[in-house]
Image (cartoon, rainbow over all chains, first blue to last red; front, side, top):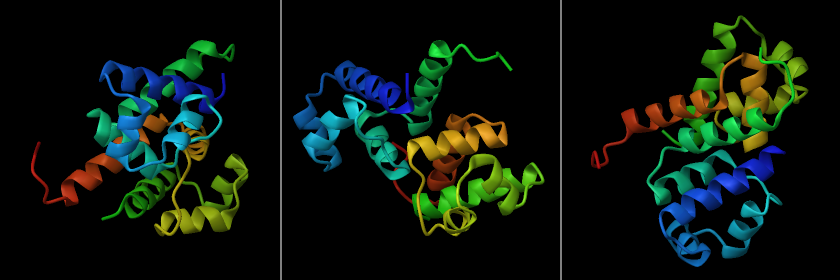
Amino acid sequence: VTAEIAFGEVLRRHRKDRGLSQERLAQVTRLDRTFISLLERGLRQPSLTTLLRFAEALGVPASELVRDVEAMLRDSSPESPD
Amino acid sequence: VTAEIAFGEVLRRHRKDRGLSQERLAQVTRLDRTFISLLERGLRQPSLTTLLRFAEALGVPASELVRDVEAMLRDSSPESPD
């Protein structure tokens, strides 16, 4: 799992938890719906300010979105537990 | 305070806490030292993967870096506490 794939899954999960369509999330964040679709498919990655915009729109701290990403990366990684 | 300015201060603080020069952090992260300098001055912003590279190099979760940024933005913001 790459960071992009992990973020895409985290974004989709939080969006659906709030019952928002990609279209609606695009309106709230004033981001392009195509960009959101690319992000959810792991084909783009967010900048810090994009992270903060999603966080505000989803009512969840950006740090929590990043924590979810890190958890997914950790779970999928065979690296040492250090 | 913008997100860029906040991140720059957070990055500089964590880097100095570890006793690393910009040069050394650049080597460890394999990022350009000029880019790191621009980030610390709030003139660029990191992507998610750049955040994760700094986190690994600094031995601190990326979510903690973002949490520090959010705390700085909150402290500097006169917005409603909602």
